[in-house]
Image (cartoon, rainbow, N blue to C red; front, top):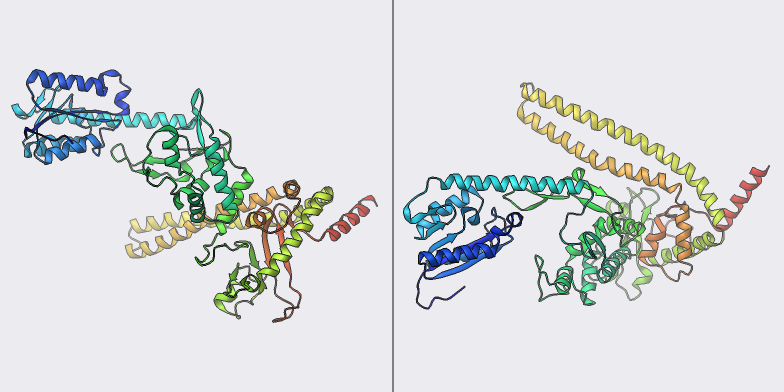
Length: 557
């Protein structure tokens, strides 16, 4: 803000330009507006001109830096005149512009001039001003409608709408509509996904990135392109937030897909961004180079679905989080940590139903963490070695096993899905009949409110459950033909020395823990069933050999 040596009030020359105005050509440019305003001030004898402007701000938005400075001067009594090129430069919101010209400016004794509209408050009210303001608002509304139509058409063609590429990408040379891999940022994105796959949550990943002095997305963009994004804080360039990491982990753009029309604004006046219903999104696959594999994406989804926050005093997360289930009640097994020096030996898992409701509900299914690690590591080594050495035998076994098992489960799921969909249709009919009865006075309002709330709640649950079951059914169909993926993974990990969260989730779908044959006995047998991704439950290598041999013998006979 300028300081006045002689305390002479300012004659403010104000200019504004939005992106929509810029499309109309040079006549509305900031430079052109300034030239017109300064020439007018000189010719009319305004002796203390002070130029303020806002470039790139819509006329429906009055929270602009230049305009805020002008209002502070006006409210301080330091302004005698406000001059604009025309009324639309002041704004395109009928009520707000009317409030300024008819109430605010007169109350502070500010003379208002709109040069091209022949408006000068010194000569009294101009009856045409309200109509001009209304036309300006209509223009803003019509422009907004046209821009939305253009954006929607672009989205339907699969074009990228964002002006700035997502972190991990940059604009392609010679074609700004396309995006390509930004090597430095892409490596960070891959690192984030791999850390999550290994069992770390967004807050842990954010702390690790900060420790490694990796620039956060806004500071990286500022350093590379010199553009300040919203929320940029250059005093904390390595400060990653949990929210930023979580958004990266949920963004399908890193799979090479484009999701359009996910967000909109409430209106041309209110620019607050709101998320559209998922049914209105437009999704286009393989539009650009992916930064991660589909397998890693699915692995991260699985990890995040079962992720439970570990107590702060324990640095390492639960290695088997989301993988262990009780053989009898199907509930997850919960990790119980001990505080002794040999905690790694005495940590144990118990059925969560037993822990919550006692022995009348289920038994403990107790197993030490150290024992489980040894069992799983040994079995993982044996199965992956068999997959590498006897690939054909494994594929034939899985084809027979999965075909029968998956078809049975698919059939059961289909029956359940049909039942749920019928109930959803019944609820729709019931809700319609209930509404009609209420309108006709057959059902009191209070009873209608109670019943409609119950129906709505049940329908909401169904709408959540049906897609989940359909997705599960689709996974089963895929599993029949996906055994080759397991073999490929086994080739990549030819030497497994220790278990890691990433390794577990890469190979294992779930582990089912049975109860000991004799309670309280440390030596009694206990069944541990390991279900591998894409191949399901596998027997030992010897049993697989024998099964295939018998199958071949029967076929030749």
